[in-house]
Length: 393
Image (cartoon, rainbow, N blue to C red; front, side, top):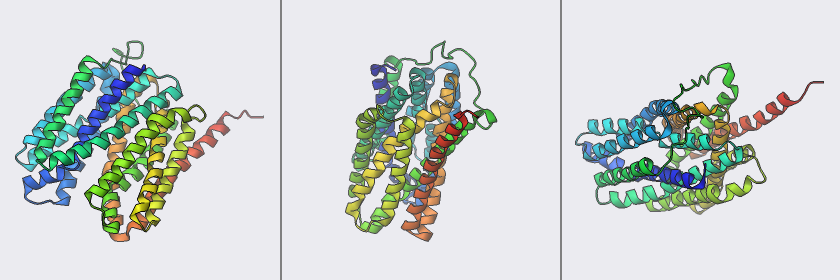
């Protein structure tokens, strides 16, 4: 993928992520406006509905993009998502809000399609990893400016944040319509019947293994991020501003690692090496959070955490993309997006229960154990690959 196309694609991802992150600080308050109380169960039900619909919609959109092209499906997803955001902002009842959030979740496949577009135009493994790193940096930028902007707008009106998010998606629609090129050519599979991805069969052992590793990593990641703000508030008395600054710090580090450091490291190391190191760093950071006794140490643990995330995610996405052929990249992107959505359902539920009944230490230690298990499976795959490739005497 040439630099201009990658830059445009990264801009689309950053705007999409920013519009999503913009709603994070205000959704609970819109629910409170509609129901009369800030009920945690109701708020999480709305979030879970979004993730559940994304779990179903992302693979379907990815599969259709393998047949009809990435650009038409992205145009459709952005258009419907923009209307759903407008509907959410105008909702007069909780039922209507949940309906529009379900529609938005069902079409939330921009990052999945972006991953497929990178895979379409990057055959070299290192080039693919660098491009995935650029997408990850764009994702991080969106999560830096989105919540900050949402908090500012939300202090005026929670509904206004949904209208601003809808306006951002309209910017994306213009970018996709008039600037972003199609990446799936007739030679690569456009206008041909897409190959099904039966990942549960024996022919896809490598893909199953990588999906398991990807799932375990994001299970630890999502369960940690879902309880982190609650924990630092209870343990160290940090309010929204202090927590927000720390989250912004994490986002900046991820951007720096994936946008600046990763391409240099790939000159010496393979994507798999960096993914292994990144997973180990994330696990170490989670253990650190479980052990510290002063809030100031969080900047050290989160520096390690953000570096690990920045190194591991592009490598994992590269390894996944090389486990299928070029006519299956769309459905793979949807499948990995669904994997993340599933962990976004299971992780917070588990973290909340463990944290409530067993305390912060066991919560973060178990999350670290899950990430270390992902690292162990990835490292073990290296030795299995070596033994498979060793000729017999």
